[in-house]
Image 1 (tube, rainbow, N blue to C red):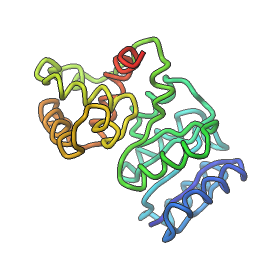
Image 2 (cartoon, helix red, strand yellow):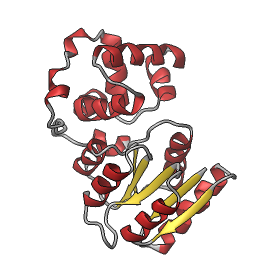
Image 3 (cartoon, rainbow, N blue to C red):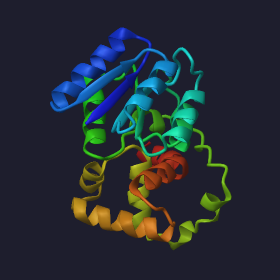
Image 4 (cartoon, helix red, strand yellow):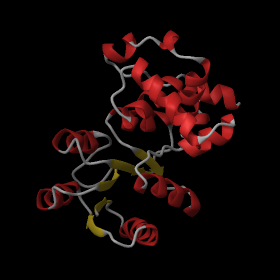
Length: 220
């Protein structure tokens, strides 16, 4: 499994690399300290399995780098690692297709849990950031998402999406609702069919942008 860590701070790269090595021994880890270097590495290693990306680094400003990266390599999962701790940056990263968002201020155990979930094929967004937002999350600007009929969801399917939108994993949702993980997956699968969401990542993106604020209110 190949992983590229793109960050202009050596300490951040080394910290992420050490955590990744502890979680998964058989990794080929490459480092880039600029966006240009990152793109060069991707050209050399198009079979890269995961990218950890700082939003702001030489050659990349805010979300421009993420947008360019997703446009050229849409099938390579990207986890954003950023100093920004506001829900706006989380939602915008989600809308660009990121499968995870890790604040640089996160404690070691929080970073470990996030990377564990990503390596296990799940997604990971910072629940504490999403929950502290008092304003409704900005909706994606595409008609398709707005046309989806939320009234077709059962109360349990909506519960699952609310918790998913607040950053919970399937395991955490199961514990919260007193269900098995398999039952949660069934509810999520049914919701995905009703909302015409093609995969788990799309479901998470939809849940974060549509139910993040609802989760905040529900969890007080």
